Image 1 (tube, rainbow, N blue to C red):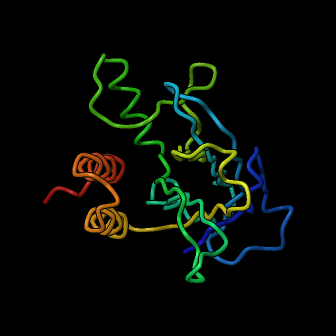
Image 2: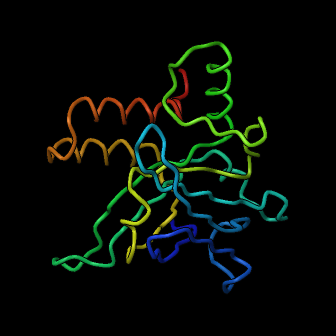
Length: 186
């Protein structure tokens, strides 16, 4: 289910739902902020999803449910959009796990630990780090949508079956999905 989208011009961008007509779907999506960061010499497009957890009809599952940021072209020779980058958003529980490991000098969980003034971002801010340079997104669209763990895993397996990713990349992606959204113990 699409939550919010934004046309990209290859630079920083922002959209707030108060600037748009009322959106159908889950209540409490405030907007998006798109910027760039260079981490360890790699360029990333960073997407912040801003949620209004004070909204009286806020869908509280948005705080930790699987949500992805996807950069897509408008079309392709076959007529459909092509995904340039796709990445799940983090969430508060995932960040806290990263912070605990960091404090203990461990590094098991895969992810970027973001702090502002030494503090973790608030739970109503979700972050996604897309492995694409922001300038390369010019003319594409950013789509933020709710998904499921099964859909994420199926996408990884499909990419692996098409030889679009290596076995090591497949394993890393599956571990990342499991760490963000652990399978409940029986």
